[in-house]
Image 1 (cartoon, rainbow, N blue to C red):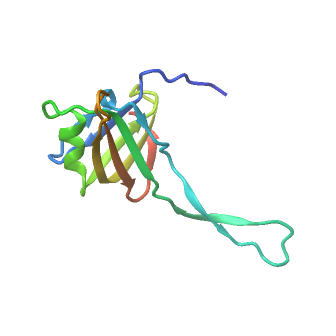
Image 2: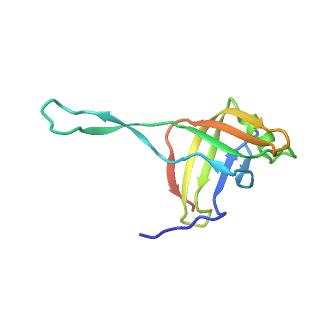
Image 3: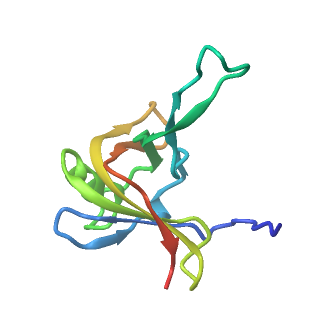
Length: 142
């Protein structure tokens, strides 16, 4: 099994309120786990000797994106993410970059909140909360 060391190649884009694709990779320091998860449904019968499950619907976990706050121009977290709160957007996650054949996850997401936060004499940070809407499209970069 091949192992891939990811170091600075991850690319995360969002489609902003104007329909422009924005590469937010430089502004994201951490992002909660993303991927594809399903609910399981317990179908254990009284006659079974162990639990049994079948696949249920795909779950829509909340995703948290955070990093250093930036309000400059039209490309920083403030001008992009604050305008995505309350609306659907497309998020594309490329864990190992955008080289042809690399894995790509495409999500429709609902922006839930954008919150700048600071402790006195500390760096200003932000947290952007969103929730996946519908199924994840898993593919590769063409």
